[in-house]
Amino acid sequence: MRQNDSTARIAHVFSGTFVHSTPQTAVEILENCVLGVDDEGKIAFIEKDKDLVSVSKIWGFETSDIKQLGQNEFLMPGMVDTHIHASQYSYSGTALDLPLLEWLNTYTFPVEAKYKDLDFANDVYTKVVRRTLKNGTTTACYFATIHTDASLLLGELADKFGQRALVGKVCMDCNSAVPQYKESQSECKVETDRFIKELLKKKYPNVKPVVTPRFAPSCSASLLSELGEIANNNKLHIQSHISESKGEVELVKTLFPGCKSYTDVYLKHNLLTDRTVMAHGCHLTDEELEIFHETGSAISHCPNSNISICSGMLNVRNVLKHKVKLGLGTDVAGGYSPSMLDAIRRTLDTSKTLTIQDPQHQTLTFEEVFRLATLGGCEALSMDEQTGNFVVGKDFDALRVNVCVPDGPIDLFPGEGPKVILEKFLNLGKFFF
Image (cartoon, rainbow, N blue to C red; front, side, top):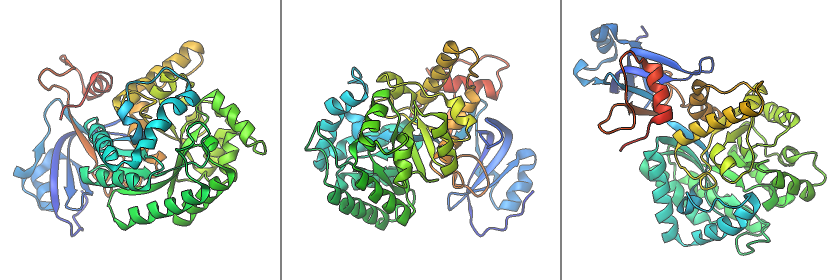
């Protein structure tokens, strides 16, 4: 048993079952354990609870302070949404009748143009942060809009409600369909610099800026280069979209004829780094996946959106085979649900559909997808040294799950162990707050 050599005080102690992932094990279940959290929010210890008195003396807490989890309860890491458009939340659950490029021009850009109105922005952003938290999303990687002040407001709200977040002011200097919704290249640079400076000046503990070119078709080559320089000079995260639909891939070929592939566009403009996450990737080639692996860039798999607007189906197994970092995203509002439980279920559905099409395809297991929604998301966002599982020294970021709440959606039966209970929760559960 490790001695308490820390000056931090133990603030919380939980006893019971803990479910998490490690790089080696998709689901690790720790039964009859006790976990301590210090007053800085870090995991101080996790031990077997055979001798609680000894543990309490070593770590300096009273056994009466222990929060005992019930027989049908467990703690799991908070879920990580690696790709969500906060600015599209107002029309989530609607407007799913068009393919990607038409969908953007018809629904998305006109709505996003409204965010120059801070009252409108405050209403939507308050609701989306609260809703995602209610759905168990403790970490989110957000797209906002081109409006700096509204994007700063989103960061303020994420901090206020206690959500870990990467917030991106969208950059786009090309938009012939909705000409009023774009900036000049110089405006993009000035406003991106202002956004980064002002958000960092707030010193929010868990909210940081992410450089956000919307996607290659909405950005000039010179703007992409400037954004790559800004991200690398400031050591910031980068997010964008890639190879979401076949029509988009063909458009990129015409717009960037000097590039070998969609991936090559971002590579040549220094936008593929070990802090980059690209949404979708449905139509990436094996050669492109090799570049993702070499650069340490990640993919956000957004199965609800991929299916809802008929963009394609990502072969997650092939991505993992290429050792590319991968997390899950809801992609609201292309995806109609802000729930990461939905993202887990759609990921499994997509994998099974690929197996129907090709019986040689190895279907993902629920354990693997659980890891993608938690530790995998943290890896994709380069946060896995800070959070993502229950390891001493990491931030304590957890959900307390009770699968037997009154009138809840899950029925349990004799002999069902914690792994069965976890699977039932992932397939049938919902959050009540």
